[in-house]
Image 1 (tube, helix red, strand yellow):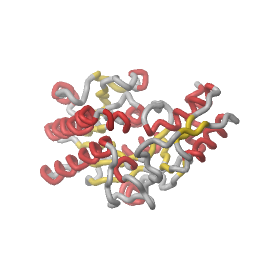
Image 2 (spheres, one colour):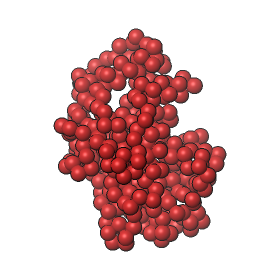
Image 3 (cartoon, rainbow, N blue to C red):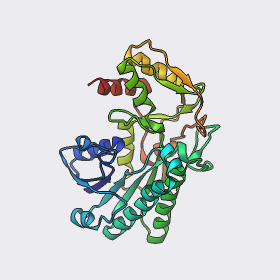
Length: 300
């Protein structure tokens, strides 16, 4: 297929590009490189250094994509709180531009959304029909992007798909933003430094390996639209995550604790049964195995 991956020089996007190139697709990457790096981009893909907030007609007219994986985003929750207008420009208006371009070329869009930031506090594993109660502009913007996909599907009969990722970790992860805790912990351990746990560390997340996420993202191609959680269904506390990181790093450096961060969720994990039933996807990489693979990358 002819495919465009926005954000394809980033953490998750570059793994999606790798998977597409490996199966023989013709891949064009659109990335501003503001936070990402061209070294992440496979030699088998073509890189266009562009911003999704600007017109991209020339790129899409040249590539004529059959599918667009839209992973370009402002992904830092704290930045979204401090700069909600910029967050909306990237995550809402950028998504609308991609949808309009996709319509001109009859392309399917697979949109990377978020689980934790959309559902808010979870007493049980969140299903796709759970209440959506974002507490950050980032979560609200991603939810708006999902609603635009659904509106286009209703209006034009398209089959765009939204994937709500859990806390993705793995090689190439940027240690910035809320989702970068694994990179932060392993980076500190590699330097022999103390990592910081905010609050008591009992807050839980659904940590899903980036290789599994890339595989899930490709399974969405050809599906009849809809929204799917991409996670493991397992909640892991921050203190348990740190203990596993220390184990794979063979380190006895203890973390320091700091005051809890304002607005941080205590429990966030996903029910991924719909993806298993309809997409045939289940996460297969266990947390400790994924952390070992990430540790090997950090030390390389």
